[in-house]
Image 1 (spheres, helix red, strand yellow):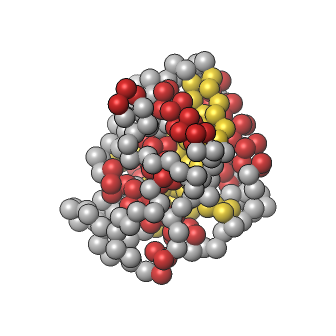
Image 2 (cartoon, one colour; image 1 turned 90 degrees about the vertical axis):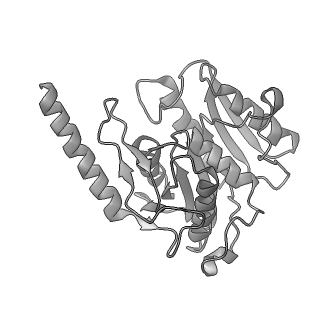
Length: 275
């Protein structure tokens, strides 16, 4: 296949993904998005993806895609936060693919399209609102799961749930935005305190939800997993940490990397143990 044909196929594929994503997307803010300076618009997808990763480069109208169980439902839900350094969203690899994996275990997945780029506080508002909307659907438990920056967002939601970050929109906002459990896969940005200690905004208490953490030693953000696991342990919050020697960062569910094979098996068992 020549270069021009490859590009045409890639553009067609990306256009199809964009169309499907927007057709299935449900917005989380019915009116004005709190703190957002731009008008609501469709998410911007990057059409040039030589590594096969579908990236969303701008979100001004946060939303979600709901993926229902493909086996018997366990009446639990998970909010999925894709990674991307708070600059982009790795929408399929760390988003919808993960939602489908969860659906295969009986969970209802809500893949969150939170605000980017460079909108950390907006992203946390989006996560809080998403958890409340899911809780309004009356699940037995509502968890949160993230990858890289999405793991950072997940833990921020898991430690800052007592903070009121936006004015109530509807009845859903009277509900708790505390996740019942948290999964952090190759987490980042959790050791931004002095001398690589816990990031100051992550105030861990005995009320912080139990967590599953997976990381590898050769990941440049590897220390984040150790720091947050230690903070949870110190407060006697149930935490399970897995630390493999190799795998790097950003592997998602890839089958050609041991880390991409191992974490789903370990996470699946942990989820079964925390029903």
